[in-house]
Image (cartoon, rainbow, N blue to C red; front, side):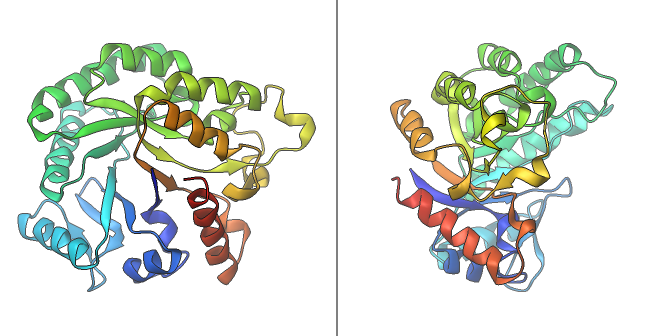
Amino acid sequence: MYVAVRDAMLRHVNKTDPWAAMKELGVSSVEVDVSRKMETKGFPDDGGKPYNLADAASVAKMKKDFAAHKMSICALLMGNDFSRADLDAEIKWTVDTAKTAKALGVKIVRVDMLPHEKKLTAEEFLPICIGAMQKVIESTRDTGVAFAVENHGAVANKPEFLQTLFDKLPADCFGHTFDTGNFYWWGFTLEEVYGIMERFAPRAKHTHVKNIRYPEDMRNKRREIGCKYGEYVSPIYEGDIDHSKVVAILKKAGYRGPLTVEDESLDKFKGAEQIEVLKKDVAHLAGML
């Protein structure tokens, strides 16, 4: 395992130069967000413009730039909406992103299964997601790129939802973006969270690492989804979730990928404090490896 960072964290360190931000944090791998327009708005090139991943020359330049900086992309991140009416367009975007990942030498694409159409129930949404990913996988098997669904939001944090996805889709090319804070955010007790992690760690292909610090009397009782998250979200090194336990769970399951820093507490801090929090997050995780 190794420590990586989400591109969304880098603007807190250096708003215009992601390369400098990564160097300051002491990380050499980043997860890059890909927009529907196939742009990398969270990771601009040396000229300050997003890479255009729909353009072969821009893809080649991005690959060359990362090599020149001796850095890597641990995953591409998508904000999918498999509940939208034009599902074929969503499938095409996902296929195109996987093909771009191959061209960049990236092995993982994070997919999101957050139903934006609120009228859909989880039971209605699940077969749509499975059908869409079956079509995506059929079109991208030759890329060697795997997809990883994040436990994210009210639906995809449900163990039964994830388990059905993993039962229906092949393990070699579909797994888990193992978010270490989101099961706790959903309302599971601290004790329950570790058990759920043990259950799904064998499907982990990628991670997001965050933490929450609840008052002691809230930690081991069920809470409503997202209970006072803005108040209790914390730096990774200060939260209730013991990431030494998480790392041990992942190691036991054979995971060898990134621990990708996604600290959502940064807005509680100002200026240079945000940089120091991120540096401490990185050091905290690196000390466990």
